Image (cartoon, rainbow over all chains, first blue to last red):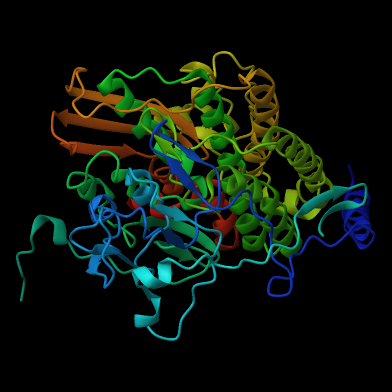
Length: 165
Length: 378
């Protein structure tokens, strides 16, 4: 191929993109859809359930304070510490529950795999930014709250190219 | 006054014509490493790559963590190719424990590792484009990579650093309706990367800049021990997916792309052709995959395999052969983990390729070696 045809072909290929749809997610205005409700784990079968690995969610009525999540995190990020909680449950004699530091967490989800009581799941919430380091430490009371995550768009493939919408 | 110098400290002769230039370690065109080049006018006389700026001691860290908590650490060297980095480690631990992995899990692993190879190669291609001043080739791969990252997010829950492979299978099953979405997006992805030919690979400006620069002959490629796309671009048909098939690669039809030229054009084109082959493999795997079944075997607390053992497993990663050597002494932590990576092997060829080249060709030759600084330093 000679030089002139090659350059014209390259320009032509670029000009074609004026006609195809824009493949850009306009992030704060629109947010991607997730599969499922976040990463969960079923200890009876030993297999996880697909989902996004975001902020954790703790079920106070199931947590026994066994510290297995904290032990699982020891070699990874040391993000989980066990803290005293005011309320007392029959199954949680020591009244301790995990507190997670998201400044350290790497969102690998091994703590969820370690929990044998279905007490710790992950949610789709990924917007965790804070103005201080202390703001990134989530207490058991904060982890109890189910987050609201807006899910607007997903990737769609049309004849005029892929787009978010 | 004459001084007795230590043997290694002999003073270098100063030549008025030769200038020593440090490219890096903060230079955007070098990655996290330094390339010391000596130039005579515009021509490179000698080159000394100096890696090691991002050494994080992953191998030593692995000796203090148990086999499961090693997983998020060992995928850190290449976060874009994290499934392939973890693959040999997981295969090795499975051999030590004597676990047989479910059939469906093997196919899921193959799909995940092929998607990861494409994600890595697209990122590499984007950087190659911006190295050559081709901004379009930075924008398009960086955008189209999103199609596959979306698939990996649906599959594993994370965009990068998936921590998806574990000894005994994968951590979670595929989500509902994943096969259709995967097939649709992979088909579109393949259509998109074929369009790169007109704007990049058949572009006369790119050909003029990269043809016949940094030629690595077939003999030199074998003698220097290069792997992966660098070896295949020099005319050696060597791909571990074909030569030493692991998991289910022996049941799939794997085609390798070989080019004879051995210049930086061929080295940049082979990964692009490999991406189309990856799309083929994903389509085959989706078709042959068992529709249901377990994806993970439960590990027993006290394994009864040959736990005093050493294994060496290797896989074909985005940068060539990637091996993992594990020594186990029947403790929860491995006695030794050693990664043998393709990046470091390919870097050895750089001083030979750059001798006599123009300085302007340095970025294209350097990045065509498919080198990832973080992986080489570990």
